[in-house]
Amino acid sequence: MQGQTPPNDPTLRRSVVEMDARAIDGDPVSIPSPPVGDGAGHAGPHRLDAAPTEHWVSYAHGGIPDYLAKHYWWAYLSRFGVRFFDREPIISAILFGNYRRLVDRTLGLLKRGKIGRTLQLTCVYGSLTPHLAEYVPAEDLHVVDVAPIQLEATRRKLTRQAGGSRNIARMARMNAESLAYADNSFDTIVIFFLFHELPAAVRERALTEALRVLRPGGRLLITEYGQYTKTHPFHRLRPLRRIFGALEPFLPGFWKEDLTARISARSWIYAKRLSDALEERIFGGFYRVTQYRIAAADALGASPQLTGPGA
Image (cartoon, rainbow, N blue to C red):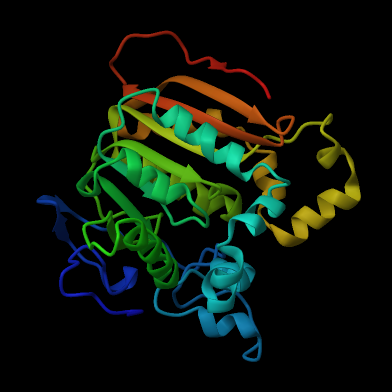
């Protein structure tokens, strides 16, 4: 299964590095290749420095980004990691007992507006994707990931939920930095704990791509770590910050970013703008679930205000 395209699933690509100009759902697209050699971990002639004996190197092939292989092979690319971490008790422990609450808040925001054609940007462990399938028809739910093993795991969960039926979400192998969809393809994009796992430059490109394929009037639902504060105990205690940084090497940088400002700035590239943002804070603000509504740039409206209840 891995690395092959099932005959009845034309949306699953062999490899992101093999994709060229083609059509998805009848929409002609031109698929750019992510830049190489910038030190951000892209496959190409200039790779991250590594000794041949380092275990992660065996995972850095076939379009898998180097940063993913080097820092997260044990969690997302190994079969043992997939079997171990894709269990709700494990996920809940990692999120300090807040997993179910985070999923419920994400789904709660999803149901508060038009759902329409929906993209889940990268696979996630746990029950989020099966829950999304309860609200979004199979033909309107798209799930993409750069790792075939993650697509396999998600496909199994959805097929099991559908009682063995293959009429499940449309799944495709893509790099979040260069999505094979036409501009303005989706009404809703769901991103669940992705950005903090990306290097800053990769994060910027993935965010820009998400804004490109989101229709004006659409919603971007992002569940993530909250922004760094000087009040939360997990932020104040240096030993804890070091532990988080060791396990999540790109989290310290993400903590310091103003995600709302980034979205507002990047939206203008595609003649769009951030019209409003609704944030719900979880676990004292250590986590957040945010809905960003994106409008056409020529639509009238006041500057966006970040609102929402704390928790």
